[in-house]
Length: 174
Image 1 (cartoon, helix red, strand yellow):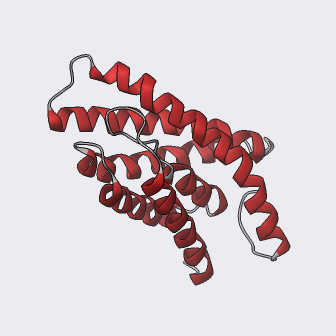
Image 2 (cartoon, rainbow, N blue to C red):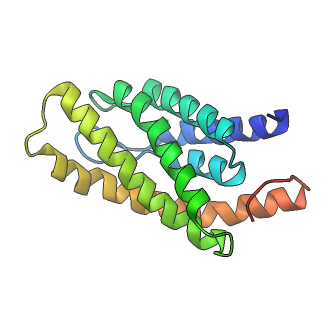
C-alpha cells in the first residue's frame, strides 16, 4: 500500500464523514448514506482488495459512529464490508472496454440498493420492527439515497479523475 493512496482514500473518508454528519434525516431519523459514494470512488480509483478491505472497515466504523438510525451501529459495521466487496467484484466482472463514467453510476445505484437492503434488514432485526417497516423505509430512504449517490458520483467521478490525471497521480481505472 502506498502512503499517497492511503492519504487520498482517507481524504475521501473525511469528506464522506462530514457530509454524512450534516445530511438531514429523511424518514424516521434515517439519513442517506453519503459515505457510500466516497467509498465507491476510492474503490474505483484504487481497485485492489487490500484497499477495499481498509476502506470498507474504516467506512463502517465511521458510519457507525455518526449514524442516528436506531440499530445503525451494528448494521453499518456489517453492511459496509459486504457492500464494498460486492462493488469490487462487480467492478472486476465488467469488461474494461465499457466507459467508467457510465459504469460508476450504475454500480453505485446497484450497490447503494444492496447496502440499503442489508442495513435495513440488520437494523430492523436489531430493534425488532421488521413487519411492514422494510418496504416503507426502502422506498422512503434507500431509493432517494441511491438517486442522490448516483448524481453525486456522476458529478464527482470525472472531476476527481481529471484532478488526479493533471497531478500525474497514477490509478488503475480510467
